[in-house]
Image (cartoon, rainbow, N blue to C red; front, side):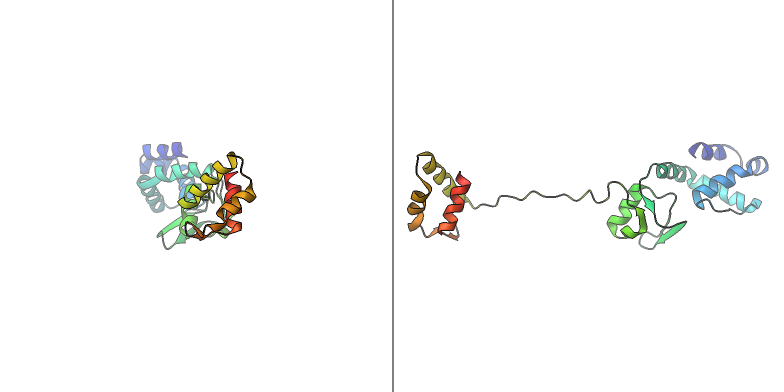
Length: 184
């Protein structure tokens, strides 16, 4: 498509209309009308040529990118999205465009028969952080030393029976058992 646009741009509009109007009409139809029938009068062809001069290479590049896309729009032709103030052509929407429109909420997933690759994989799953208070960590280290010295779990529980709090938590048998598990 880029070669065809370059061929159009390298030829004057009058020569193009006289010698090869079908090239101009086909390219304009694919890039701007989603394959629909363009008007064929000379005045319209001059306007098409001006439009191709204006952004034909950009549209041809998008057309080439759209060939490699993975998304399949659920609509035909063009769709005007008010938030972007732009018409989006079903034949020319790329995966990047689709991901942008979906992530901003301008389109829903129902607007696509097949969603683009890469959509939905950007969710970062954070690993749970160990938020054990420092007092508990110190207690775990002490219990670990006691276990290594040969003390049994029930003896450690007896030792911690007189302790009222570990950090901000009330020292219970259950808490001491959890700390012993962590220390092992």
